[in-house]
Each structure stands twice: as structure tokens, then as C-alpha cells.
Amino acid sequence: MSQRYSNRKKFVNRLEMYDEQLDARDVNLIKHYSTPDMAHPEKIDPRSFNNTTHIWKQGDRYYKLAHKYYGEAKLWWVIAWFNKKPTEAHLRMGDTISIPMPLETALSFLRTR
Image: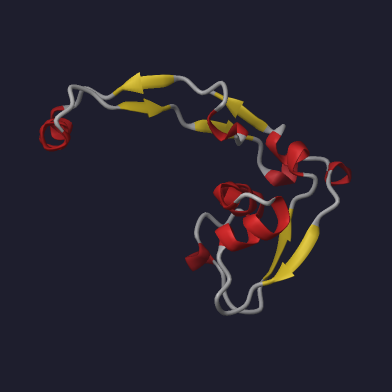
């Protein structure tokens, strides 16, 4: 399992605006994970990584690249975070992105608030 949710605090959202969703799901509460705090890539020693570069082309998706390079599509967010491009809509055809390798090194920069 990815470290994405490891050591993250859980909390219950008690805002009234969620009452309708709770009723629709027939539950009393929904637990949320706290927002992670991750070091920005420019603060990371580039010697820590052996990056693979990828030229963005039609049909590319973060989850596909994560599956190809990490063997796990759920780790798409590592590539998005590392490139400071939160969604595929932030990329254009021909853009060069980096795939941080090894994965364990990238995940080591994940901290919890």
C-alpha cells in the first residue's frame, strides 16, 4: 500500500452542509484524512533522485505513467506533485516532465501536519 495515507490524522467533518450527503449515504459520519505537507521539489536535493524524463503526448495520464514506472496507478499524485502540475490540464503536448525515481525517496518527503 502507498504511503499516501500513512501517519495521516483522520477527522470527522461536522459541518451542516454535509448533512444531506450523510443522509443520502445512510451514515452518521464520514472520516476525512488531513492534508499532507510535502516539501516542494526545489527544496529537495536533486542528487537524491535518478529522474526519468517523459515528453507529454496525447493520451498520457498521470495514472498511466505511475503504473508504467511504479507498477501502481494509485501513485499518480507523486508525479503530479513532483512536477508541480496538479492535474493533466496543467500540461501541454510536448512538455517535459520528470518521473522521480526511486519511488521510496520521493515518498520520504511526505510529512503529516
